[in-house]
Amino acid sequence: VVHKKTSGHALFAVELLNSLVRSSTVAYSTQIRRYAWDQDTINIIQTGAGVAGLIASNLKSLPPSQRRVLQILSCFGIQTDTTLLQYLENFQNGIVCSTDDFIEQGILDRAGPIVIFTHDLIQQAVYESMSLNERKSLHLDIGQFLGERANIDDSATSDPETSPSARYPGVVFDLHRMRSD
Image: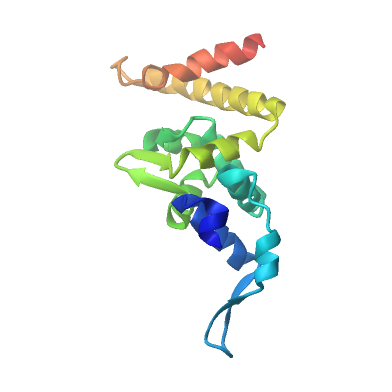
């Protein structure tokens, strides 16, 4: 059944099974000492929206503050470096701690100094869960925040190549672009 509904896509299979367990559609029965489910209920579950749809629906169950962290991270694409996360801690309190939680949950992963969404469909689902106006507003808020931080930190460093504005030139471009819209 899982293979049929997921076409063998590993990420989708995991998400589908997690969703079925969370909704108690599949549950462990102590009486029969195995997992039990209602086949008819599983058969009518619609999975046509694909992996992103299932992931997005699962993300809706997160507390608003955690959803906000993922939305902020999704604005940077599939990956973000940990130095940037430290800057963003003052923009969204708890972003570093939440990131660690998302790594434990398998939504994010860490590769050296980089935090990365475990699948591009997760990043896309999170990003597209916001309306266009919400995305523009969040990009502008992040850009303004980082722009202000870059100005403060740029004046404190003697090496222009290691300054925040040099390390994150896209922020300056996005900020100017969002202001002109």
